[in-house]
Length: 275
Length: 347
Image (cartoon, rainbow over all chains, first blue to last red; front, side, top):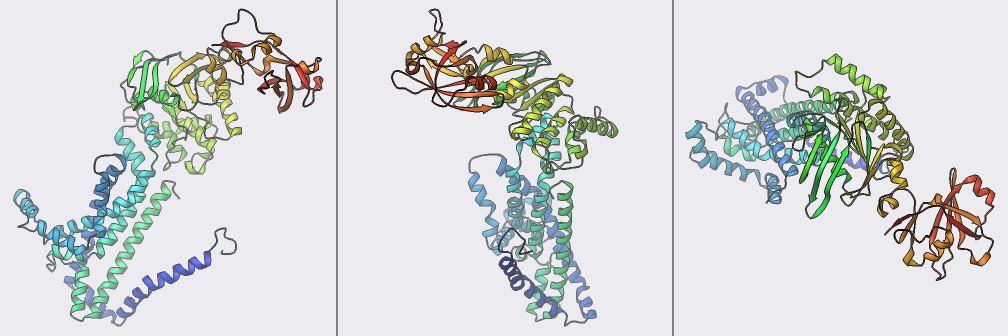
């Protein structure tokens, strides 16, 4: 491989890659796995099948998936606007998009909790007009996760939209396609793989998110308690085995879901001739 | 379908891309819009297609005013310079696209679509590539697929924007011939944009020469070559030697035998093949010296230097058949006499 490859530097770069992956990803994660091996299988099943743990899993994955889906929709529109139109203050909006990256997530959580709590100004409005309570409910978690995951969508979709050949749209129109058909049959299929990547990133981020969620979620067991919080709670009670058992389970589920998304992405790319 | 453009103007900011264009194209013609880059030819094509709106003027197809109609309703076929094939679709789906987006009432059945697409792919001789993606094709193949895709909707007008611009020379030559034959078979009114005069002359039945957003001349290729309407057209179409009476060329032209008292204009344009060369017998007084020559296949191009009295060394290009050149037995540095068969005079 290294001898026949036209690209030089295979050995040092693969060496560095493996070292990096080992130090930063594999060793910490394997520690988690080994630690949880100290538990017997029955203990493990006991911890995981606890009702409170199960419902926290449900809350975490459900809110993360929903938030990633909603963020994909809005993020796509934001990316579309930023790429396709020029308007006053566009640069400002560009900077604003990255804001959730830079902001400490706890700050975001506190701000969101303040305005969405029943006495906050948006919370009060939603409560009075629609009878919807956001804060201290799973809906609040979704809200916080949308906030932090929008930039992932925008920043993955944006370059693809920028690169998109607009002559393809003109070609579609000249063949008699309506605007909507041009969008659904030409633009969207070309952007979809990137959107899936953004969705995967947003989902991964959402599942692991802690800081912004705990302030708005209310952390009510069985209703709005997320897995990361449960892990922290266990750790605080020096129940390290319990924490690792939950963490490992979460890791495996997340890994499987991401694998699934990757497979889907592979299938989409293959079907659309991008591979 | 005939095309009529009436008083079309288009500005991009302060730049005037098209200036009061009036053009009539009869049904069934294969027309070349020819001009240097930036002359507005592509803009004009896009206005006919409806991809661009004119600031002023009207577009009539078959006598119907289509000025404000959207491109998707005009029933035109457009072939883009860089093909604009749908990357995420197979060749088959690309060609089928125009049929699949038709409203349900007009949409052919899947079997009919399949039959038609394969027939079109046969027409462009690429049916064996039907399940490939555009990225897997060569430039020439992509352009033929783009053409098949445009033909699928049975357009009444076919518009091609520099169709061979991005292809290499040999593929280009083949495709030109092929396009001409295709047009002959289908007889759909077609317009193609090009900056290559040779391409325009070779393919088109009518050539429209554009410059600075205005039509300089419209006519058959031979018309435009033999009777250029002005100095721009004469210079743009084919090779030409330019002689200026006010630049001390008059003596010289008199000995070459074309300066007559009733000639019109002060600038003579002479095609290289209208210059006849003979070995000079009067030595130092000969009007020109043979500097070099190049083989252009059947023709030889001679590069001559005028023996100007004021020492100016302007170059003159002449062309003659190979055999004739061999008979003359000329060497580099030989003095030669010139005769000019005909010239076009401009002011």
